[in-house]
Length: 251
Image (cartoon, rainbow, N blue to C red; front, side, top):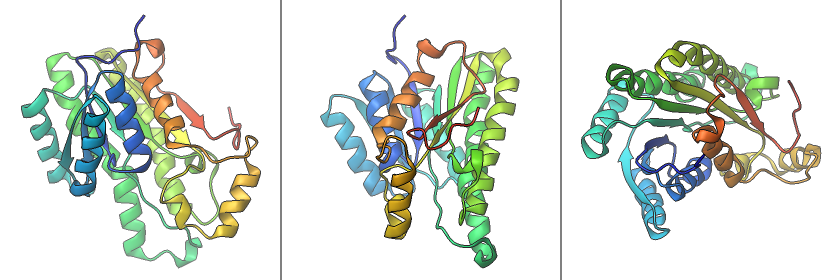
């Protein structure tokens, strides 16, 4: 059984930096053609250049996952360039920690649109052509352990990420008959720009709470994604894999 992804086309949102960028590198290293989709097209181009320098195949595409029209355009551009994307990784996300009662309406709508509605419309848009053509595929949604166990100061974000987990499980049931597997990776605290936007006291407290005594690395999450889209996980769907260094141990 091979873990290679030759002749596969992967679209990864939020792939210009952080976890998404590491996923792009890993899937390209396994042989996939990677569409690096990000609202920051210049950073996306740099990420694609990095993949190519490492011997992979990648191209950057602009997308705003909060806009349905942008997602539809992305699907069409990728299909015309490479064919249907049969690996969909929803990694784009954003948050800013603050007490729930201080969350303003615009912030709530932005966090929900980016972290939950974006994955919903990405899945709907990219799965349609796979189902219509009878082509098998994979979806990996990047949630968060905040969506599994909650997180103080991140209530709306946790709610959106919890919705991503429910999306994953429900969609996996619908897509199984089409030989499309849908799984979820839930990172704990990870070395990303978003983590370092938090106050230093909170950063230190989180690191102390992790049994491994260190933050997750983007590559740790990328390895989990690579497993879930490989043949080594061919009988796994509708599951949530926590990559948190043991911070959360919920069945």
